[in-house]
Amino acid sequence: MSNINFLHDSVFAYGGDDLGNPHLRGIETSLIQLAEVLAQHGHEIRIFNNRDTDMVHQGVHWQPLTAAKRAKADVVVAINDPRLLSLSHAKRRIVWMHNVTSLEKALRKGRLWPMLRYPAITVFSSRYQARTTTRLLTPYGKRVIPLGVNSAFLVNPEIRRTPPSNLAFTTQAYRGLDVLLGIWPRIRAACPQAILHLFLDPADVPAGLPEGVQVRGIMAWPELAVALKEMRAVVFPWDKPETFCLAAAEAQALGVPVVTRNVGALPERIRDGVTGVAVSSLLQMTDVLIQLLRENQIWQHLHQGAVANPQGLSWQEVAVIWKKHLLAV
Image (cartoon, rainbow, N blue to C red):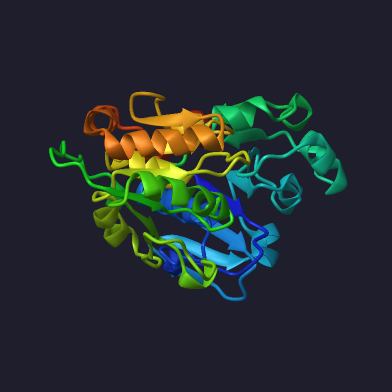
């Protein structure tokens, strides 16, 4: 088995016991879950980030980033930043990219030279992310390995015969909440019984919400999974490129149709016209949502499509891909 070190120059301190904390982003939750599964497979896993103390959680050793240079490793995985590769003497190097990175940004942050200096495979979570990253930032090759979906959402959903009447917004507020609230009054006027559920921290929600909007707060994954199964669709109106979008993958795993903008990696999370709809404009999104709320046959088609075509992998399945292609030493 391998000694695998993950290096993350995180903006805040966190550990494995923070999994489920609503303040963690997809970067942190993905790292925790992959690391714990790899530890279950018998690998020696250490995560170095900007924490002050050591801890062991679910078989994963957590240490301050300053201790990384002294740690033995067969494989080192730098999160987002190839400069971290200088902290390890591992023979096998990986850069796990979670963000869209341009050549200009890499030059500005001093990341191009480390990418050239340290032979490393670059791992992306979507085809979009891999396609839009210049080859200068992947000189030693790249792989696309999707993120996993938490087991709370992998429940083998059954076909619903009675269509729900509610929509849900489940990602961070800055990812298009203002846009969704802007088009909601027209949707509500056309579909007076519809309710828009916001699974957000109330502190992130603006005052003076339109009629028919309910703030549900942040829920733990099992609770959120139960709530989402009662939604007619989940909406992602943001027009900025996502590199994966775990929230869309979670909804699809539950058999819930997703209506999203046709940008970034979101079209990879759904099968357009089969498990959801990818639109090109807010006007089209508004019309699609009204039609979806009014016409049960359309919802039934997309719901059945989502149930029959599961779009998410478990972290166990994702870990097998990592081991097969990258971690064998």
